[in-house]
Image (cartoon, rainbow, N blue to C red; front, side):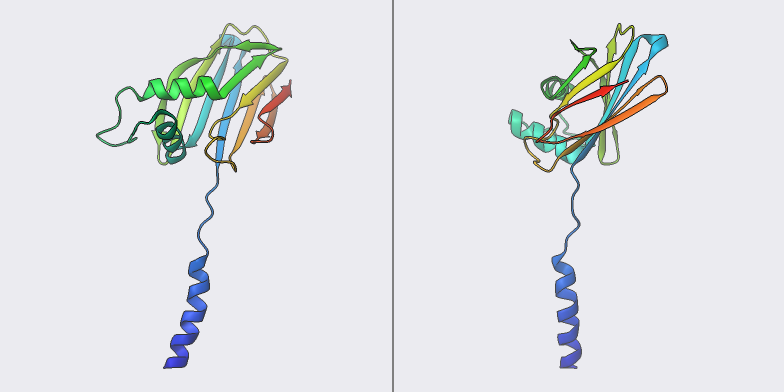
Length: 165
């Protein structure tokens, strides 16, 4: 009996020492809609990561998806995205409109739009989302202009990507 217990402990303890690795990844999708003359942008990030970052940066307690969630949390989200995300269209920095957010499971989806875009040849994206708090963070940016799809992964060592369409 002792041999079985010893064997079981020797087998189980190493298995318990391995924990699931947490991935730090955001996805930014930028689609040019020619008929609307606009860039439509959807960003998704893990809820717990963005909440931790905003709570630390602003000394607040957002309590997302609870009854005590801050009523004005969109102000914090908008300001954070303005600070961490920049988009240049054909070399010109463009301001985006923050349209809102949506929760889906453990993700937050942010909806942004840049209006009055006649055409797109180059998109230069600076994406520093979550890099301050999570050095392993990777920010995948995918773009679609017409039938052209391009993508780039941005990290703490490379925060700017140029996608030519």
